[in-house]
Image 1 (spheres, rainbow, N blue to C red):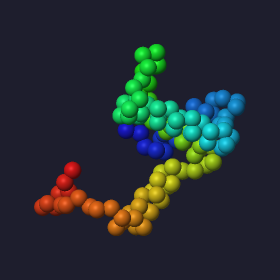
Image 2 (cartoon, rainbow, N blue to C red):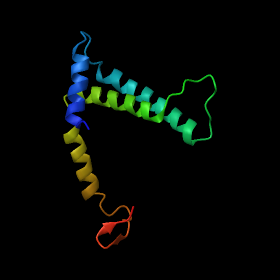
Image 3 (cartoon, helix red, strand yellow):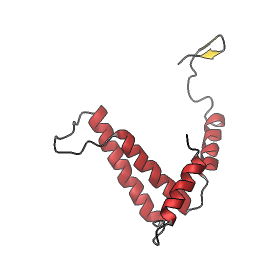
Image 4 (cartoon, rainbow, N blue to C red):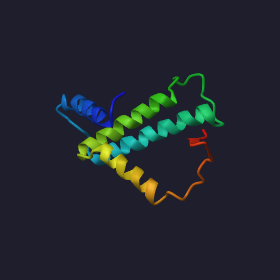
Length: 114
């Protein structure tokens, strides 16, 4: 399994081979919106009320999540943001500020129910 740092490095090496480099932050944000729309469409096809047309390509939620992750990494890299640090900050926020927001599952004999 690759770490977030490895993913960021892999994307940077891939993009670095092209003269154009990363798109602007604004263009990458537009791409994020586009990819999120594609993910929403796939989720709707698989779990919603709108089945796919027979003429539509068989994309998957997994593929669309991968596309979204790639663009998120591109945006972070272009802005020199370490996503591991960013993620750690978000998790700290959830574990502190929001620690009493949700109802914990009951625990039996030291093992949390799933």
